[in-house]
Length: 496
Image (tube, rainbow, N blue to C red; front, side, top):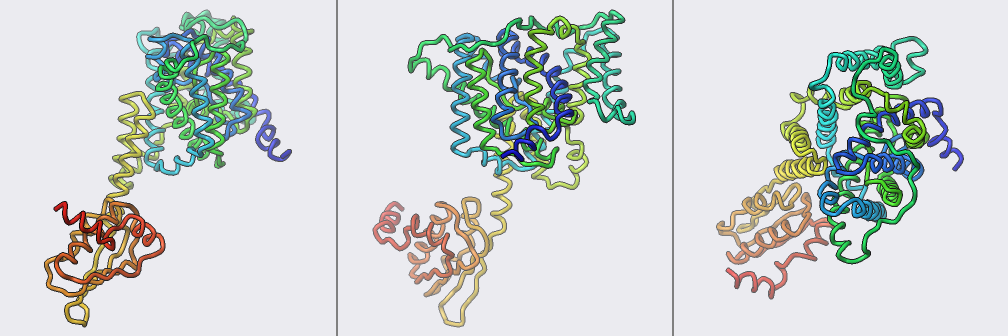
């Protein structure tokens, strides 16, 4: 217990504290921007980011990952806020949390096993593009000073780590933010700052119960939004966990992450915040800045609320150009450049899955839809590929009038038609032997195909013998097969 506590919390104290500080600074403008997207006051996003980050630090399944208010979640709640107001959003946030906790107990986090590497790569690349696109409003129709500050920020981020000793001790994004803020203040440069994005809260969040009628009608209003938020939140969180796992060469507890995200959203809803989830951009900032443990996530949430409530006068002077430079660094670091190089090496199906995921996510700004399309395409390509590996070999036995068919491979919905087409039902044979010792039947469709083959041969007057079924195939054939049930066969024949 103590060893686990040390590894997850206190194994990297200095780097975690500094990384948490960098993340907190980068979280503020994003939380305000996402609040504006959702149509709520900036304090709703800031309170949510504080609550979610602090709670997830204790109950999440992935140390070092940052969770807060996100754009993907904000897009789902726009209509609810517009039609029913903030109180219904808070209630939907609480319900979202309960649904995510249930998902954790149902172990739905294990479904991530079915998300292929091509989908994850497409998700990462799409998110990198979206992060960069989100910075464009800060770089269009602006003065040359903004470009100068942004370029200087990128130079600091990439060159500062090359300085001996000091460069490895202090996260370069933190140096970028502090340095450009100081230059901006000293030289009196007139550029857009954090303070221009909206009013910051001046009090700590307080516990409150959403002011809504507790009726079935209310439940039916918020349930569709909560279900959507729960799905999007878990998808983005689990995908982000997979990416952070790869970056840190560690593993995460996906089902615990589902429960943790739920508990964090319940807390956010009761403290005046909107629903949130893991943030790939901020998580990568955290990892790149040296954050690895839960302490970095706790620091990010704690420093965030301290700064917005008690240091708001200083915070408001941070130039947006500095934060834009940090987010461009995140975008560049997030994009899988190797995937572009490997386009020639990868199979066509893998490339189609990856590129389709990118296109759909960027076009819809909805990560859930993009991942769904990617998983669907990957499943179809996989089914088609496996279906082609099924063959049926036919041999004439020495016994006159006997034909043996040896089935080799996987028989399921994608290969069932190919399975049926391999048999010659018009051949004049008295006995047909179907050898399944090298085959596996997976589903109802494959069993129905076997029934069809047997019944067709019998209708032509042949005696059919099936042998060699493995235990699993025998179980599914016994359960769903009808070729040995005269009454069912009669029904089937009568329908023709």
